[in-house]
Length: 307
Ligand code: A2R
Image (cartoon, rainbow, N blue to C red; front, side, top):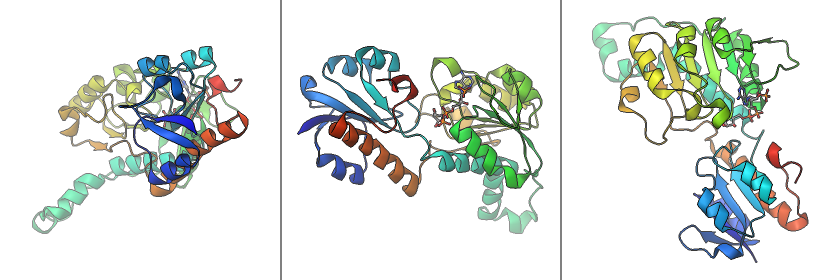
């Protein structure tokens, strides 16, 4: 049997299929020389010290679309194929972005608390909220998920604008500068990859450009948004609302952020439904099984596509 190192947890369905082809080793007890395949997730990735100890490593299969926790430069140098799970989670993450946006606009948490506390009976009708219809929504990263978000916004009659590294062949207005885009937006939705090139790309300047009536949604990586600048902007009213599924040091979320009423916070569940996680798990496993069968994979990350 081929030897597979498991980083982080895997589902029972994944374990059952993997056990038919691999001997699965855990991080607290493995013989580095034997390991040829790794299964991991977007959060844990593969630490440089474990990666360098695995001299016979051939494939790192990631459960998730983001792979910023895996050193792909080193992987390419060593001829190791890194795979991920694109596309199968587009609609789910897009739904999460919409859920956060609508929750901010319609103050779902505040109004839910209003009913539960009994305030409705005592104080009467709740204060009015804002309409999510007819808003200008800036998508930061118009890739697979970004496009799914744009599609899902159609019933709200949104005007879509976007920023990404390259201009796309789409009807939406392209902005070269995130700040210039934020000035023209009611909502900014972050859905770029994490990593050095997008680190704190949403800084205080961008937040102030979005403004007191603006809403920031982050379903990408915590590193994309300057979290302490975000807390300052939300506290001072320079930014109106934030809906966040991801944070700088997950699962730790600063108390200052947790105490702010103009936020909706989720525990990184963008793709976290039974159905979508099953599809992601199946693709993670199939990449490994295909490599065993014929030396190729289904969904290599772009950097490794030539390997
Ligand atoms: O390369 P482009 O022009 O297509 O732009 C990509 C954009 N992007 C960036 N935009 C601005 N500055 C950057 N430094 C930068 N780096 C990348 O993000 C593209 O429009 C988008 C990523 O799209 P996809 O590669 O199709 O990724 P997908 O599947 O939409 O997932 C995005 C991220 C994952 O990496 C996870 O972190 C998260 O969603 O779940």
